[in-house]
Amino acid sequence: MRLNALLLRAQSWLLLALGRRAAALAGVERMLHLDPQNLWALASRAHLHAQAGQPALAVPDLQALTRLQPDHAAHWFNLGFVLDAQGQHQGAVAAFERATAINPKLDQAWYGLGLALLQLQRIEEAIAALKRNTELQPLSPYGWTQLARAHARAQQPGKARRVVEHLRGFEPRVAEALTHELQLLESQEEPA
Image (cartoon, rainbow, N blue to C red):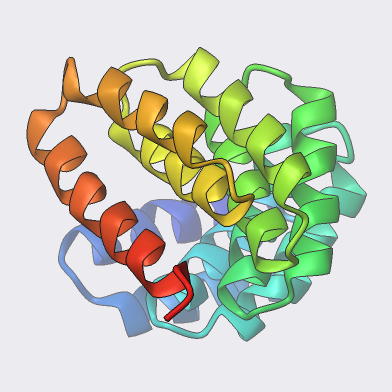
């Protein structure tokens, strides 16, 4: 049984490398038929479904992974990612929070948490999560950009401008685009 699983796994890798996703998915399905708790097969099937634009099909496998390995931060992050992609922001927040509790240095989980919190209009919590992301990834423009947007939504234009000025030091083009975006938002909020 173990040898069969290894052969199916190798075959699936090869099929993926050749770009034959459907055939690779069939091999993963065969692996799960032999062992419904095969971690690699569950993760692979979830990944294939998510890549194919079918995140709803990925959720059950990711939930199974979080049950089988509840202290594995990446499983929780992946679950949060697909839940957020489906607009299930409350579930995404719970998954991202679990991921950050397991691994407080998982920067992408802090970023995902911030985005999901923004969707739920929990702006101050989003700001805290995005600040943590920028501490862990100080040269990535993504967290800084979302942090500036969150400050703007929280009616904190001065803080938003300070974030943009910081961003200008290492991503001037992003800072310039963000400056225009924030100016547009401010002009829309001014009374007529």
